[in-house]
Length: 261
Image (cartoon, rainbow, N blue to C red; front, top):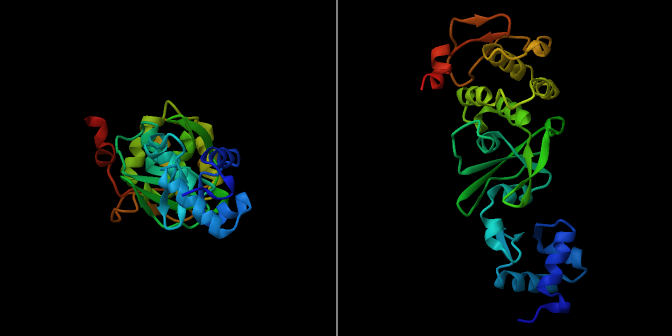
């Protein structure tokens, strides 16, 4: 089928790259190129036939270009292009930085928008909506020669403490923080924790920083006003930490069992 309005594959891809459009709908395509919806549908079909784009969701397409394997083999790039703005965080970022051995087949993505989970290829893409004031602390990194927005090391820890269910739970985040201690900026970690305005997070982080003999003084004025569980997934114990306003419902032996292996 001849492509309408002389929109060659080279021209289309060059223009999409120029506009930094890697994920689009037919309507977006129509608006970008100033063509009718009918012609846009024809162009999209033309690109699909040549494996230059791939339908990820119904009516939504990922640009593959002339090196489709480079894109399809990079789940972080795909994840961060499906919705904008967004960045890779939580368990995915912890694993990327080598702070946890868990290799998740779900890519965890922080965004300010609500988005349903997507299954595409061998991965699931889980989008976690953050309050706007928590959407910070990310940077552009080149992964597999493609640009990806990724949480900074400190923010990956903070995001994970903020929403433990997306990072493998409290024990896994405690382990990740220990593994990260020589690679992160302690002051930045505390500043990021304070910026989330989550006092429960600050209590739990302060407890761990003290255990790891890291600086934690900056958190002392931003703790939970009532006692909260150290591990929210475990039952209450009879051990209370007045300094950090915590119900310590997990023993050191259990929490740090990985240090003995």
